[in-house]
Length: 150
Image 1 (cartoon, rainbow, N blue to C red):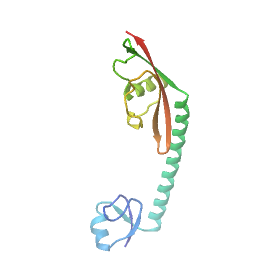
Image 2: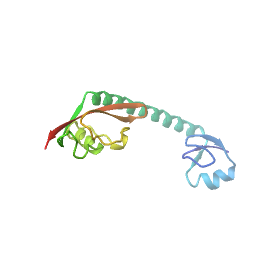
Image 3: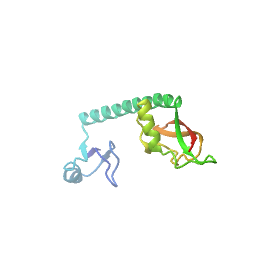
Image 4: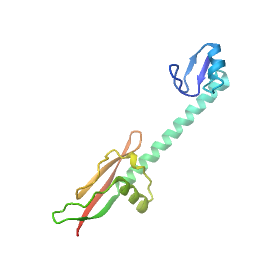
């Protein structure tokens, strides 16, 4: 019996894949657990529509990420931190502080786990942090750390 998988099944196949299985396996295991449906004209149409919709959503999300990447490239986030006599920082700027500042000043929400550069910003100067907004879309967030002596 030919079936379309509705979810990934170990040692059988991936979601949306059309495969051939025995009738008993399909009726007694796959169908009751809603892991597959039988191949019919209607089920093939539904599968094609779902795949087309996913592609459209993916393209839309990528376009939005590219627009956000251009916007982020124009922004420089300033941070003033206390420093010692020799310009050493007391503490560091974390990714959480960077995301909070983006949210507060520009209403841009980015998950801190999307940052590729994970290290703390613990030296004065300009930093370019890379963020993966979408698969294949990487933006830079510019950060300027200024010191103010204690």
